[in-house]
Length: 465
Length: 141
Image 1 (cartoon, chains in turn purple, orange):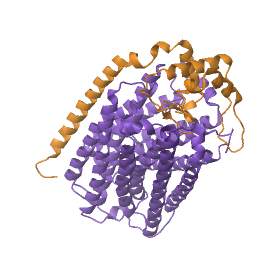
Image 2 (cartoon, chains in turn brown, purple; image 1 turned 180 degrees about the vertical axis):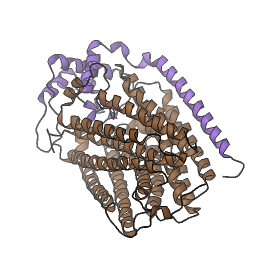
Image 3 (cartoon, helix red, strand yellow; image 1 turned 90 degrees about the horizontal axis):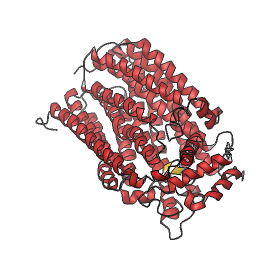
Image 4 (cartoon, rainbow over the protein chains, first blue to last red; image 1 turned 120 degrees about the vertical axis):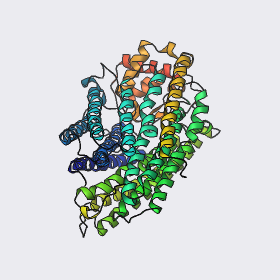
């Protein structure tokens, strides 16, 4: 660690991993409810489990992004963090708010929760991924702004590198577009139209900036490739991401009451959205091939390469699969969407957060890299989780193709539940792949506790380019 | 990447491209808002439908169902349920939940009043009238 205030990232990373475990447990509950419909009913109905599953994902990724920024920005700016105390205070506020929200979902009926938290004054709840009560939403904005203040001040007093500028652009964009979560008109078409300004412009917009910046940072550190080269790549990748992704929002405007021209715009631009992810993969492999040093942290290199490949497959290929309007007409809102969602989130955002954790955590624990034995276990967890996710995606895709055929294409279309009964086999297989994923996650946790011979962090000379 | 393509050029293309496409997006948004009155069925957005949307949201219906294809994929599409099932069936269905059939997916009992059920049905009637470019492909959603 070059600056001691970078250590504030540690609690953020630990919280991220703990919430990740919670997310997967609720994922397994939902997976089982798909085949054993009354499992845990009425204690945890599917909708509650799903809120917990998706909201935990968002919250732990935000913890990961914030931790990453606290680690990365001081090192890039070559100065201590503006206020480590603020960073630590925000950690506890965000954790408490997140935990209270999840407990609220689990133990209070949603309508009661809404009435008790001011949803009648400003209705924002009950929309996918934005289910949080009003105080939580306001809390997210407050924490995000205070966090951005801290990080921006740090950068302003130090060196302004391209990596930290791009990271900050992404994080500021994240905060700004979240403000649309407070706009919920009664007109359903408008509601849906601007809901995507949060959801799409996050995951297919500004989050890609965050992802590319984190990947670029880790690649500089582990490969020693010249910063000029990496930063040029970074600009090219984020240009491709935003040029395709902004108008690409149109692929959500096909069938929600918006004009037909979005079918053309959305199809064409979102068909190009795989390009930035492909560029990221080429970038990661290219930099590792041209490496000027052998970094002892092989696990971090593996995660970095894996991020590129899995983001391209999940977001790029599986996104393209159903993004053209004539295809999407049949696949919209089916298990195909679920398949894409799972691999894209895992490949792009889960893996990039684990990449930075994998790189930074050993250093914060006083060593350049974990012991050989710990890294082997971590790399096992990489393969178990990643291969499990590939199978989850394949099984959901199979279920989706069947579902679309039975319910929407066949001469005598089947009602929804009848079609669901026909694809049970694939839901069972998905469930087992989910259990395997959990085993991979436990393996990942175990890797943190394996000791062995390590070199102290300071022996390894950090890049100075 | 050759030496002639510099980092400064890459940076300028990034900022220029982003600003251009974001402005284009704003322009398209402006145009969409202009033509929406023709497609979004706003003349059927009655006070009952507005109240119904609030019920839809505060019961987290989207946590299981899709509405115009968006939401969760655990339970049927409801954007066209008004046409598929009709108002009386919807209300009777909601009152009969949960079925408690062993092993089957269960829908919670929300204890809605008759007025609330009417509002919810009104919301489904409004949603059903939105011009969705003929989506879904058939009545099953």
